[in-house]
Length: 195
Image (cartoon, rainbow, N blue to C red; front, top):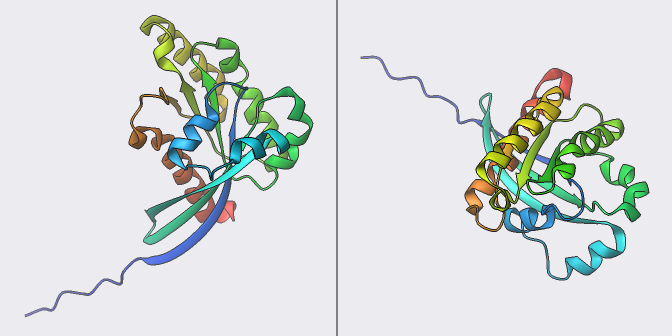
């Protein structure tokens, strides 16, 4: 009788990574981040003073026989023009970005590539994920057009595009873009070229 081989449990690895949540003012970044990774009380006043707010979010993955516990520092970078000169400092050290546009404001979708380019100019070729928010404010035909345009604009960044309505989309669905970005970051960090 042969005794089955005992498999060693997956090794555990803990990582801390910084991501930036980017997009024009008023697209719903703070709402999305506040649902997925709630901010501490009083953060609104602090954000208006320095142009960014930071919160954290924890995830666990199994990648290549390793259980990875990932803590993400989410930097919600304001889209207000007054703070644009400070943005490069906020991008420093980022390992991924989530860029947000508003389905009812096509110019915010058109600007999404500029946000990714600006972050990559500082942080290198980091992964990107896109969210089109406020999908309930447009007709299904207009939404299809916005989605097509976002996919065209973001194709060169290999950025998946997610459609949400932060006010009504279940929290579990709002987390999906964050999980997708986290997976991209973990795979990049686990590859020899990404370390």
